[in-house]
Length: 112
Image (cartoon, rainbow, N blue to C red; front, side):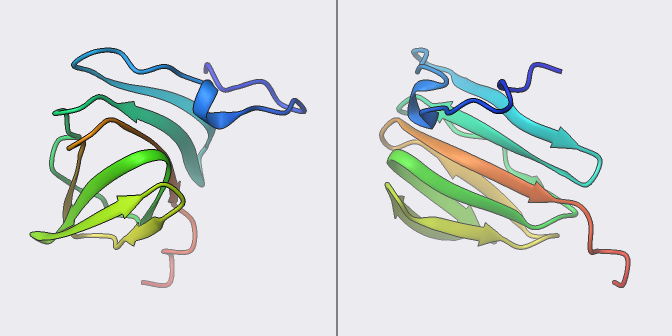
C-alpha cells in the first residue's frame, strides 16, 4: 500500500522530493472512505484535468500553485488551501514548483 509510517512524526515537505519535469505522489492514508496524499509538482507540470465525484481539499505546503475550478483560476501560496467541489472540472498547475496535500473524503455522499 506504501503509506507513510504510522505513529511517527513526519516533516511533510521532506516526505518526497521534486523530480525534474514530473509529478510525484505519495499516499499518506488510503481508506475506502477517502485518502490523503502528498504531491510534488515541478515547474511547468500539471495534473490532468478531471472531474471527481467527491470534494477534494488542496493545501499548499511549499511554493505556489494555480488551481483552476470550472475555468476559474486561483493562485494559492504556501499555507493556503481550497476545496474543489465534487462534479466540477479542475486542474492544478505548477507555474513554479510546489508541494501540496490532497484530501478526498468519500463518505457523507449517501444522502445526495
